Length: 397
Image (cartoon, rainbow, N blue to C red; front, side, top):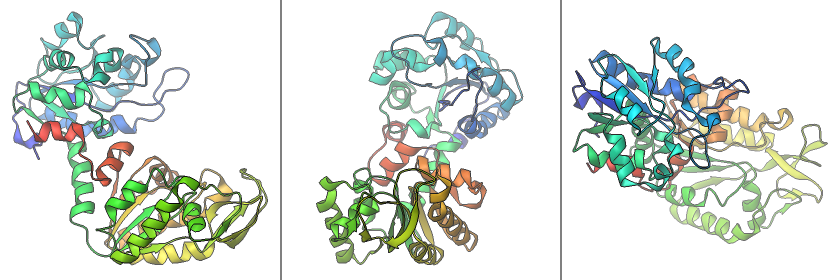
């Protein structure tokens, strides 16, 4: 893996692909700077080692050309504040104005290019667009794990124009080290906690994990597809009838490979999808019509927690219930604390996927697990066993 320490940045311009796709309020002020903060170690390393920095990113989904709402100029004040130094804004990403700024860049200076997606060529992976972008730097650094699964010009094509002068930034390096530790060097017992609404979005993940796991914990709405596949009554719970056979097949494969699958024995059910709905605890396979499972029950929580706390490697992707509603967050919250407890006893825990990360952040536990991934789709594709274009580009050049 080529990293920052493989290069001398003294007197060099580092062109860094970052993920600054951040949310704003009505005044165009950044409301969550997590992704910006994640890039700081890479930027600071290059500056401290005598280099200058040109940052490029996408923001939102502009339809065609420049749209003021999606201009990266809005993040310059926050970025300058985080870095403790002035960030110059180029106003474009491939125009003459942008090159006039980056061509005269001196050591210690930082420039932010305009939103890459103002050009359709970015998403199309256009080679000539990538070549133009490459003119902004001497060394290419990819530190945008969140977009590494996209075959875009700035993530997968551009490295080819740097003749070996490309590497991963600190964030990308830590993300890849983390997932490879879990998928290739996991200490046993290895437990995956897979939750969320739909089985369909997790099938390939589960299939690729089967040869590695000791335990598979199922939670969230997807658990009711498994329960129905086993002949249970699930009432009005979320079920994907088209995936009942796939759920059965997973259960068969798990038995064949000796993987223990835990499916919620009991559930917190409600008569409506509302926080203040009537609710009660029942056997997960005996949910009556008009009721739906919105969280795992106390028996399932206790069983799951015991399994997690006995594990040495933990991968968590997806909540146990509708944790956004206070009355249905108990399962997810207790599982989060169990992951923390196991981590404190020496287990390696990787949390990834939007809702799992949201849960860890909600309970302010981010600093108490081993690693929280910044890339939803990219992480999931790695777990599925897919090659990420943004990773392959650097490893192959």
